[in-house]
Image 1 (tube, rainbow, N blue to C red):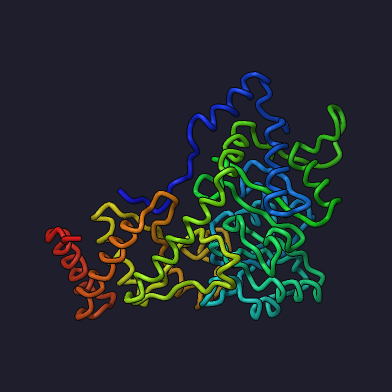
Image 2: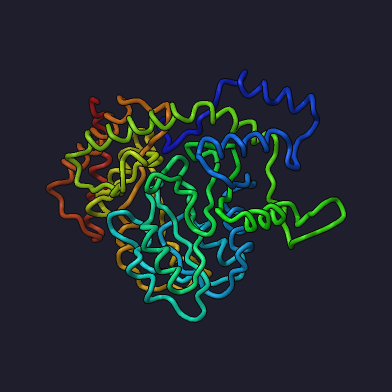
Length: 389
Protein backbone atom coordinates (compact mmCIF):
# COMPACT_ATOMS: atom_id res chain seq x y z
CA UNK A 1 0.00 0.00 0.00
CA UNK A 2 1.14 3.54 -0.77
CA UNK A 3 -0.66 6.14 1.42
CA UNK A 4 -0.74 9.83 0.62
CA UNK A 5 1.71 10.49 3.47
CA UNK A 6 3.64 8.83 6.27
CA UNK A 7 5.15 10.44 9.37
CA UNK A 8 8.89 10.44 9.78
CA UNK A 9 9.87 8.34 12.81
CA UNK A 10 13.39 8.30 14.24
CA UNK A 11 15.11 5.17 15.46
CA UNK A 12 13.33 3.99 18.62
CA UNK A 13 16.60 4.08 20.57
CA UNK A 14 16.96 7.78 19.81
CA UNK A 15 13.48 8.49 21.13
CA UNK A 16 13.98 6.20 24.12
CA UNK A 17 16.93 8.26 25.32
CA UNK A 18 14.61 11.24 25.76
CA UNK A 19 11.82 9.13 27.27
CA UNK A 20 14.22 7.73 29.86
CA UNK A 21 15.18 11.27 30.87
CA UNK A 22 11.49 12.14 31.31
CA UNK A 23 11.05 9.09 33.57
CA UNK A 24 14.03 10.14 35.65
CA UNK A 25 12.79 13.72 36.13
CA UNK A 26 9.08 12.83 36.34
CA UNK A 27 8.38 16.21 34.74
CA UNK A 28 5.80 15.40 32.08
CA UNK A 29 4.32 18.75 31.03
CA UNK A 30 3.95 22.40 32.17
CA UNK A 31 6.81 23.98 30.25
CA UNK A 32 9.34 21.27 30.96
CA UNK A 33 13.03 21.20 30.00
CA UNK A 34 12.48 19.37 26.69
CA UNK A 35 9.84 21.90 25.62
CA UNK A 36 12.30 24.69 26.36
CA UNK A 37 15.09 22.88 24.55
CA UNK A 38 12.89 22.35 21.50
CA UNK A 39 11.91 26.03 21.38
CA UNK A 40 15.56 27.09 21.60
CA UNK A 41 16.73 24.67 18.92
CA UNK A 42 13.87 25.60 16.58
CA UNK A 43 14.63 29.30 16.94
CA UNK A 44 18.26 28.59 16.17
CA UNK A 45 17.48 26.39 13.16
CA UNK A 46 14.90 28.80 11.73
CA UNK A 47 16.90 31.92 12.66
CA UNK A 48 14.04 33.42 14.66
CA UNK A 49 13.95 35.53 17.80
CA UNK A 50 10.52 34.60 19.16
CA UNK A 51 8.29 31.53 19.14
CA UNK A 52 6.07 29.53 21.45
CA UNK A 53 5.49 25.79 21.20
CA UNK A 54 1.72 25.12 21.29
CA UNK A 55 -0.46 22.02 21.66
CA UNK A 56 -1.51 22.07 17.98
CA UNK A 57 -1.87 24.27 14.91
CA UNK A 58 -5.56 24.97 15.47
CA UNK A 59 -4.91 26.20 18.99
CA UNK A 60 -2.13 28.37 17.54
CA UNK A 61 -4.65 30.10 15.26
CA UNK A 62 -7.14 30.57 18.08
CA UNK A 63 -4.48 32.05 20.37
CA UNK A 64 -3.37 34.41 17.58
CA UNK A 65 -6.90 35.71 17.06
CA UNK A 66 -7.42 36.10 20.81
CA UNK A 67 -4.07 37.81 21.40
CA UNK A 68 -4.77 40.41 18.71
CA UNK A 69 -8.21 41.10 20.18
CA UNK A 70 -9.89 40.64 16.80
CA UNK A 71 -13.59 41.25 16.33
CA UNK A 72 -15.98 41.55 13.41
CA UNK A 73 -14.88 40.44 9.95
CA UNK A 74 -11.66 38.63 9.08
CA UNK A 75 -10.87 38.39 5.37
CA UNK A 76 -9.62 34.91 4.57
CA UNK A 77 -9.17 32.23 1.95
CA UNK A 78 -11.69 29.55 0.96
CA UNK A 79 -8.84 27.18 -0.03
CA UNK A 80 -7.27 25.86 3.16
CA UNK A 81 -7.85 23.25 5.83
CA UNK A 82 -11.08 23.64 7.81
CA UNK A 83 -9.20 24.81 10.93
CA UNK A 84 -8.41 28.13 9.24
CA UNK A 85 -12.09 28.99 9.02
CA UNK A 86 -13.34 27.18 12.13
CA UNK A 87 -10.83 29.06 14.30
CA UNK A 88 -12.24 32.39 13.09
CA UNK A 89 -15.80 31.32 13.85
CA UNK A 90 -14.79 29.69 17.16
CA UNK A 91 -13.37 33.02 18.32
CA UNK A 92 -16.62 34.82 17.53
CA UNK A 93 -15.49 36.50 14.32
CA UNK A 94 -16.95 36.36 10.83
CA UNK A 95 -14.92 34.86 7.95
CA UNK A 96 -15.20 36.89 4.74
CA UNK A 97 -13.95 34.84 1.80
CA UNK A 98 -12.22 36.25 -1.25
CA UNK A 99 -11.09 34.26 -4.27
CA UNK A 100 -7.68 32.70 -4.88
CA UNK A 101 -5.04 32.97 -7.59
CA UNK A 102 -5.21 30.11 -10.11
CA UNK A 103 -1.44 29.50 -10.21
CA UNK A 104 -0.44 29.53 -6.54
CA UNK A 105 -3.85 28.66 -5.00
CA UNK A 106 -3.17 31.42 -2.43
CA UNK A 107 -5.53 34.26 -1.56
CA UNK A 108 -5.55 36.87 -4.34
CA UNK A 109 -4.51 40.30 -2.96
CA UNK A 110 -6.35 41.95 -5.85
CA UNK A 111 -9.62 40.75 -4.31
CA UNK A 112 -8.89 41.73 -0.72
CA UNK A 113 -9.34 45.50 -0.89
CA UNK A 114 -12.84 45.33 -2.34
CA UNK A 115 -13.92 43.14 0.61
CA UNK A 116 -12.77 45.59 3.30
CA UNK A 117 -15.54 47.32 5.27
CA UNK A 118 -15.64 49.24 8.57
CA UNK A 119 -16.25 45.84 10.22
CA UNK A 120 -12.98 44.35 8.94
CA UNK A 121 -10.32 43.81 11.60
CA UNK A 122 -7.78 41.49 9.98
CA UNK A 123 -6.59 39.33 7.10
CA UNK A 124 -5.92 35.64 7.77
CA UNK A 125 -4.11 34.12 4.79
CA UNK A 126 -2.80 30.60 4.23
CA UNK A 127 0.51 29.84 2.53
CA UNK A 128 -1.03 26.96 0.59
CA UNK A 129 1.08 23.79 0.46
CA UNK A 130 3.99 25.86 1.77
CA UNK A 131 4.09 28.34 -1.12
CA UNK A 132 4.18 31.86 0.38
CA UNK A 133 1.41 34.34 -0.36
CA UNK A 134 2.19 37.69 -1.93
CA UNK A 135 3.25 38.98 1.48
CA UNK A 136 4.30 42.42 0.27
CA UNK A 137 0.93 43.13 -1.33
CA UNK A 138 -1.00 41.85 1.70
CA UNK A 139 1.10 43.91 4.11
CA UNK A 140 0.61 47.03 1.97
CA UNK A 141 -3.16 46.60 2.03
CA UNK A 142 -3.17 45.92 5.78
CA UNK A 143 -1.03 48.98 6.52
CA UNK A 144 -3.23 51.31 4.47
CA UNK A 145 -6.41 50.10 6.17
CA UNK A 146 -5.10 49.55 9.70
CA UNK A 147 -5.66 45.78 9.65
CA UNK A 148 -3.86 43.00 11.50
CA UNK A 149 -2.37 40.10 9.55
CA UNK A 150 -2.20 36.45 10.61
CA UNK A 151 -0.57 33.84 8.41
CA UNK A 152 -1.61 30.21 8.59
CA UNK A 153 1.79 28.74 7.79
CA UNK A 154 0.91 25.17 8.75
CA UNK A 155 2.78 23.76 5.72
CA UNK A 156 5.78 26.08 5.87
CA UNK A 157 8.51 24.52 7.99
CA UNK A 158 11.83 25.60 6.48
CA UNK A 159 10.25 27.90 3.87
CA UNK A 160 11.81 31.32 3.26
CA UNK A 161 10.47 34.51 1.72
CA UNK A 162 13.05 36.99 0.44
CA UNK A 163 15.78 35.27 2.41
CA UNK A 164 13.94 35.23 5.75
CA UNK A 165 11.86 32.58 7.41
CA UNK A 166 8.25 32.91 6.27
CA UNK A 167 7.32 32.66 9.96
CA UNK A 168 8.71 36.20 10.50
CA UNK A 169 5.92 37.87 8.54
CA UNK A 170 2.57 39.19 9.68
CA UNK A 171 1.59 40.32 13.16
CA UNK A 172 1.47 36.64 14.06
CA UNK A 173 2.34 33.56 12.06
CA UNK A 174 1.22 30.08 13.07
CA UNK A 175 2.25 26.59 12.09
CA UNK A 176 1.41 22.95 12.70
CA UNK A 177 3.68 20.16 13.88
CA UNK A 178 1.03 17.48 13.34
CA UNK A 179 2.21 13.99 12.40
CA UNK A 180 1.28 14.60 8.75
CA UNK A 181 3.72 17.51 8.48
CA UNK A 182 7.31 17.09 7.25
CA UNK A 183 8.54 18.23 10.68
CA UNK A 184 6.30 16.90 13.42
CA UNK A 185 6.01 16.39 17.15
CA UNK A 186 3.09 13.92 16.77
CA UNK A 187 0.71 16.69 17.83
CA UNK A 188 1.87 20.26 18.08
CA UNK A 189 2.15 23.71 16.61
CA UNK A 190 3.70 27.10 17.20
CA UNK A 191 3.06 30.83 17.14
CA UNK A 192 5.62 33.38 15.93
CA UNK A 193 5.77 37.15 16.21
CA UNK A 194 8.33 39.92 15.97
CA UNK A 195 6.69 41.77 18.86
CA UNK A 196 8.01 40.84 22.35
CA UNK A 197 4.90 42.19 24.10
CA UNK A 198 2.63 40.14 21.87
CA UNK A 199 4.75 37.07 22.56
CA UNK A 200 4.44 37.67 26.30
CA UNK A 201 0.67 37.96 25.99
CA UNK A 202 0.46 34.69 24.05
CA UNK A 203 2.67 32.99 26.64
CA UNK A 204 0.12 33.93 29.31
CA UNK A 205 -2.79 32.80 27.13
CA UNK A 206 -1.08 29.45 26.45
CA UNK A 207 -0.96 28.66 30.18
CA UNK A 208 -4.42 29.61 31.50
CA UNK A 209 -3.29 33.23 31.93
CA UNK A 210 -1.00 32.28 34.84
CA UNK A 211 1.42 34.96 36.03
CA UNK A 212 2.68 32.85 38.92
CA UNK A 213 0.84 30.22 41.00
CA UNK A 214 -1.82 32.57 42.37
CA UNK A 215 -1.98 35.41 39.85
CA UNK A 216 -3.57 35.65 36.41
CA UNK A 217 -2.52 38.27 33.87
CA UNK A 218 -4.75 37.28 30.94
CA UNK A 219 -7.78 35.28 29.97
CA UNK A 220 -6.10 32.00 29.08
CA UNK A 221 -6.55 28.46 27.89
CA UNK A 222 -4.55 25.24 28.07
CA UNK A 223 -2.42 25.50 24.94
CA UNK A 224 0.69 23.84 26.39
CA UNK A 225 2.42 20.76 25.01
CA UNK A 226 4.09 17.84 26.74
CA UNK A 227 7.63 16.57 27.19
CA UNK A 228 6.77 13.45 25.19
CA UNK A 229 5.79 15.50 22.16
CA UNK A 230 8.83 17.73 22.51
CA UNK A 231 11.02 14.61 22.60
CA UNK A 232 9.72 13.55 19.20
CA UNK A 233 10.40 17.03 17.85
CA UNK A 234 13.95 17.02 19.15
CA UNK A 235 14.60 13.65 17.48
CA UNK A 236 13.09 14.72 14.17
CA UNK A 237 14.95 18.01 14.16
CA UNK A 238 18.18 16.00 14.05
CA UNK A 239 17.08 14.63 10.66
CA UNK A 240 15.26 17.60 9.14
CA UNK A 241 17.85 18.40 6.46
CA UNK A 242 17.70 14.80 5.23
CA UNK A 243 13.89 14.94 5.18
CA UNK A 244 13.85 18.20 3.21
CA UNK A 245 16.41 16.91 0.73
CA UNK A 246 14.47 13.70 0.08
CA UNK A 247 11.22 15.60 -0.44
CA UNK A 248 12.84 17.86 -3.00
CA UNK A 249 14.28 14.89 -4.89
CA UNK A 250 10.89 13.15 -5.08
CA UNK A 251 9.02 16.37 -5.97
CA UNK A 252 11.31 17.19 -8.89
CA UNK A 253 11.17 13.60 -10.11
CA UNK A 254 7.36 13.74 -10.11
CA UNK A 255 7.45 16.95 -12.18
CA UNK A 256 9.65 15.26 -14.76
CA UNK A 257 7.79 11.97 -15.14
CA UNK A 258 4.31 13.55 -15.16
CA UNK A 259 5.11 15.97 -17.99
CA UNK A 260 2.83 14.03 -20.36
CA UNK A 261 -0.18 14.14 -18.07
CA UNK A 262 -2.92 16.69 -18.73
CA UNK A 263 -2.31 18.55 -15.46
CA UNK A 264 -0.71 21.75 -14.26
CA UNK A 265 1.46 22.25 -11.20
CA UNK A 266 1.42 24.82 -8.43
CA UNK A 267 3.55 27.88 -9.14
CA UNK A 268 6.57 28.19 -6.83
CA UNK A 269 7.95 31.58 -5.85
CA UNK A 270 11.53 30.37 -5.55
CA UNK A 271 12.48 26.73 -5.72
CA UNK A 272 15.50 27.35 -3.47
CA UNK A 273 13.31 28.55 -0.59
CA UNK A 274 10.54 25.93 -0.83
CA UNK A 275 10.18 22.84 1.39
CA UNK A 276 8.42 20.50 -1.09
CA UNK A 277 5.89 19.55 1.56
CA UNK A 278 3.19 18.39 -0.88
CA UNK A 279 2.79 17.45 -4.51
CA UNK A 280 -0.54 18.86 -5.73
CA UNK A 281 -1.63 18.43 -9.34
CA UNK A 282 -4.45 20.33 -11.01
CA UNK A 283 -6.24 18.20 -13.62
CA UNK A 284 -7.84 19.56 -16.76
CA UNK A 285 -11.15 18.04 -15.64
CA UNK A 286 -12.72 16.63 -12.50
CA UNK A 287 -13.73 13.50 -14.40
CA UNK A 288 -10.14 12.64 -15.31
CA UNK A 289 -9.00 13.34 -11.75
CA UNK A 290 -11.64 11.04 -10.27
CA UNK A 291 -10.81 8.35 -12.82
CA UNK A 292 -7.12 8.46 -11.93
CA UNK A 293 -7.86 8.37 -8.21
CA UNK A 294 -10.13 5.37 -8.66
CA UNK A 295 -7.64 3.37 -10.70
CA UNK A 296 -4.80 4.21 -8.30
CA UNK A 297 -6.94 3.15 -5.33
CA UNK A 298 -7.54 -0.21 -7.02
CA UNK A 299 -3.77 -0.65 -6.88
CA UNK A 300 -3.80 0.43 -3.19
CA UNK A 301 -2.27 3.82 -3.99
CA UNK A 302 -4.11 6.57 -2.16
CA UNK A 303 -4.22 10.26 -3.08
CA UNK A 304 -6.18 13.00 -1.34
CA UNK A 305 -8.47 15.73 -2.59
CA UNK A 306 -6.75 18.45 -0.65
CA UNK A 307 -8.33 20.88 -0.04
CA UNK A 308 -11.88 19.77 -0.68
CA UNK A 309 -14.53 21.09 -0.51
CA UNK A 310 -14.21 24.87 -0.58
CA UNK A 311 -14.42 26.33 2.93
CA UNK A 312 -17.05 28.72 1.60
CA UNK A 313 -19.44 25.75 1.49
CA UNK A 314 -19.24 25.00 5.23
CA UNK A 315 -22.66 24.98 6.92
CA UNK A 316 -21.77 27.78 9.37
CA UNK A 317 -20.48 30.43 6.93
CA UNK A 318 -21.86 32.65 4.18
CA UNK A 319 -21.49 31.24 0.67
CA UNK A 320 -20.18 33.77 -1.85
CA UNK A 321 -19.46 33.01 -5.48
CA UNK A 322 -15.72 32.27 -5.85
CA UNK A 323 -15.25 30.93 -9.38
CA UNK A 324 -11.49 30.29 -9.26
CA UNK A 325 -11.64 28.38 -5.98
CA UNK A 326 -14.74 26.50 -7.08
CA UNK A 327 -12.90 25.36 -10.19
CA UNK A 328 -9.68 24.42 -8.38
CA UNK A 329 -11.27 22.37 -5.58
CA UNK A 330 -12.98 20.16 -8.15
CA UNK A 331 -9.74 19.33 -9.99
CA UNK A 332 -6.86 19.34 -7.50
CA UNK A 333 -5.41 16.30 -5.76
CA UNK A 334 -2.25 15.65 -3.75
CA UNK A 335 -0.18 12.63 -4.77
CA UNK A 336 1.75 10.48 -2.27
CA UNK A 337 4.88 12.19 -0.95
CA UNK A 338 6.93 11.14 2.08
CA UNK A 339 10.49 10.35 3.05
CA UNK A 340 10.43 6.57 2.39
CA UNK A 341 8.68 6.86 -0.97
CA UNK A 342 11.03 5.72 -3.73
CA UNK A 343 11.64 6.83 -7.30
CA UNK A 344 10.23 3.47 -8.40
CA UNK A 345 7.03 4.23 -6.48
CA UNK A 346 6.63 7.61 -8.17
CA UNK A 347 7.30 6.08 -11.59
CA UNK A 348 4.63 3.43 -10.99
CA UNK A 349 2.14 6.12 -9.94
CA UNK A 350 2.96 8.17 -13.04
CA UNK A 351 2.57 5.20 -15.39
CA UNK A 352 -0.84 4.31 -13.97
CA UNK A 353 -2.02 7.91 -14.32
CA UNK A 354 -0.68 8.28 -17.87
CA UNK A 355 -2.21 5.00 -18.99
CA UNK A 356 -5.52 5.93 -17.41
CA UNK A 357 -5.48 9.20 -19.33
CA UNK A 358 -4.65 7.40 -22.58
CA UNK A 359 -7.48 4.91 -22.13
CA UNK A 360 -9.87 7.78 -21.57
CA UNK A 361 -8.61 10.03 -24.36
CA UNK A 362 -11.26 8.89 -26.83
CA UNK A 363 -14.14 9.19 -24.35
CA UNK A 364 -16.21 12.33 -24.00
CA UNK A 365 -15.89 13.51 -20.41
CA UNK A 366 -19.17 14.78 -19.10
CA UNK A 367 -21.44 14.46 -16.13
CA UNK A 368 -24.03 12.34 -17.98
CA UNK A 369 -25.06 8.95 -16.54
CA UNK A 370 -23.74 7.25 -19.68
CA UNK A 371 -20.27 8.76 -19.18
CA UNK A 372 -20.19 7.86 -15.49
CA UNK A 373 -20.95 4.27 -16.43
CA UNK A 374 -18.24 4.35 -19.11
CA UNK A 375 -15.70 5.62 -16.59
CA UNK A 376 -16.51 2.76 -14.22
CA UNK A 377 -16.18 0.25 -17.06
CA UNK A 378 -12.75 1.65 -18.02
CA UNK A 379 -11.56 1.41 -14.42
CA UNK A 380 -12.80 -2.19 -14.21
CA UNK A 381 -11.02 -3.13 -17.45
CA UNK A 382 -7.78 -1.59 -16.19
CA UNK A 383 -8.09 -3.44 -12.87
CA UNK A 384 -8.93 -6.78 -14.48
CA UNK A 385 -6.10 -6.50 -16.98
CA UNK A 386 -3.51 -6.38 -14.18
CA UNK A 387 -1.39 -3.79 -16.00
CA UNK A 388 2.20 -4.89 -16.32
CA UNK A 389 4.08 -2.09 -14.58
